Length: 116
Image 1 (spheres, rainbow, N blue to C red):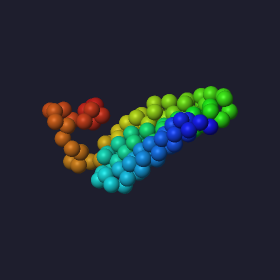
Image 2 (image 1 turned 60 degrees about the horizontal axis):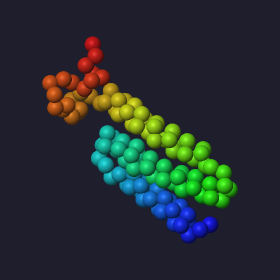
Image 3 (image 1 turned 45 degrees about the vertical axis):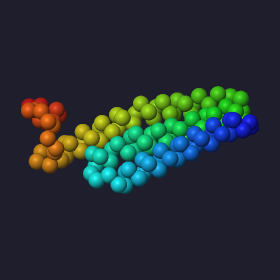
Image 4 (image 1 turned 135 degrees about the horizontal axis):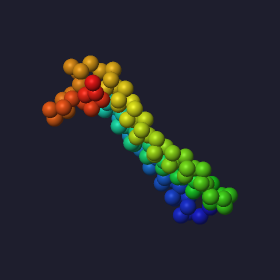
């Protein structure tokens, strides 16, 4: 393996590890459940994506076969993580008493609570 490819793989792994660490730290440090959604859905998703990119590059370089399945896993993760966060946030809003919800800043209530 050439030093350039090894450096790219190592950089992607270090970047993935740093994003994973930041996401895990955010998950522990943020105060409430709504704030904690951002750490795993953004930072940790980027961390796993960078790690899978390193795996795809290593697979391609060592075998000569494209690591398309790694890229597809990354795309699936990037597409589904925001939807998971959306569903978790909606579940949190539904189970939280209205008096504990923050103001919306508009005359209307939270959108899922406005329905008759």
